[in-house]
Amino acid sequence: MPIRSVAVIGAGPAGAITVDALAQEQVFDTIRVFERREKAGGCWIADPDDHVQQLPDLAKIAARTPDPALEIPGVLPTVTPANEQYRFSETSIYPTLETNIDAFAMSFSREPFPEERSQLNIHRHGEQSPFRHWKSVETYIQDLLKRNSYENFVSYDTTVELVQRNQESRKWIVTLRKREGDLDKWWTESFDAIVVASGHYAVPYIPSTPGLAELAENFHGSVEHSKGWRDPEKYRGKRVVVVGASISGTDISFAMADVVEKPIHSIVRGHYHPYFFDWAFQHPNILRRPPITLITSSRETGERTVHFEDGTKLEKVDHVIFGTGYSWTLPFLPDLAATIRNNRLPNLYQHVFWRGDPTLTFVGAVAAGFTFKVFEWQAVLAARFLAGKITLPPVAEQELWEMDRITHKGDGAPFTALYPDFEEYFETVRNMAGEPQDGKGRSLPRWEREWREGFDAGHLKRIAMWQRENGAARERERLVKLEDQVPKS
Image (cartoon, rainbow, N blue to C red; front, side):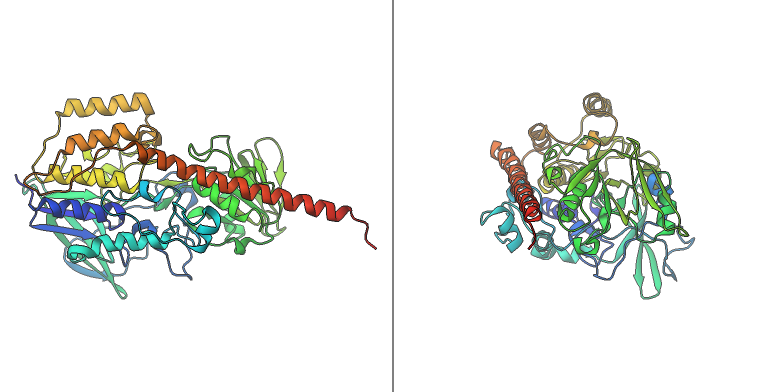
């Protein structure tokens, strides 16, 4: 059956470029976008200053099951009291956040990032800094939707609560909820195809840690996830432990190194981010620690002790911040959500097409890549297929692709990581999508070696910044020691 109506879940960067890719095919009668936040931007929009993020159940967070589906009313449409279940809809934006890869490598192929830079960005990386402030990224995404009246396709403040295939009509039935004051409005809409572009950086993951729940209960605000981190000043003079050596753990440890009680205690396992290694952790005020084995605490005595794998301990800890990543949850697709293993969704051919029914597609179900650019490639591929202009290989060949990738990357989160084989994936997707037909559709350029060179050069810029700042910190430390040695008159 020809596909004439498509629902896009999410209006972040993946959703925004998907709308453009679908619209340019010029075959769909209906394109609808459902975004649960108040505006477009996905994880690049900020929360209100007074909003406090929650960690409602650490046991479920550790089990990667903290975001269950809501109970759907028996009769729709209807109106119910507003839902009170916490839904992890906030972002991890903090005031000084900037991109951590080159803007050209990150941008869509036809839409370059504006040449605007914050003063902090220039101070860190120079007048020609390749990075952009988060606000520029938010505007960039919103501008993509504003052109050609794409915003008319979007329903904001609307949460997709359930997506089900009606076997008789062969339609996808989407159950929607929109909060209006103290009430929730519920209704359904039907579509021929679904594009899931909702991202997977919403639900924080904190590993099971003996004594952590008791610490959180005894001392409210002492346990946090990097998603809720905003400003180093909150931690000035405090005794802080940061868990994790990927991007968020690295940035937070470095940002607070000169602010918290010295040293800041960073839990690393020796497995650093593949782009940035351990350069940030060479700051003289950062003390690397082995994993936590136990936390003991008492509200009555005030004890707050973190015990480490090497037998050492740290007492009177004020904050433990986990930069330990996110769990991929799909509460609106409960049957698929039940199959998620090792934080990846099986049966996605080329990370895009669900093998059970390829009219259910995903854009952005990857990691460690060129982010926005790969979203564009996936969006064009999905749009071309849904427009009926290309076909997919037999299911057996799709299964073989997944098995080969498991053999190469493993059956876990690294399965979704494009690093370091970017060119292979980009060119595979481009060749599958083919060229636009009759001038209808978005064209994908060939992979350029300069993209990877700029990508790597951006990482070297950040490393150089850490090296400079680390050197300056060591010099300050040396001068303080010299001053302490001068006899006081």
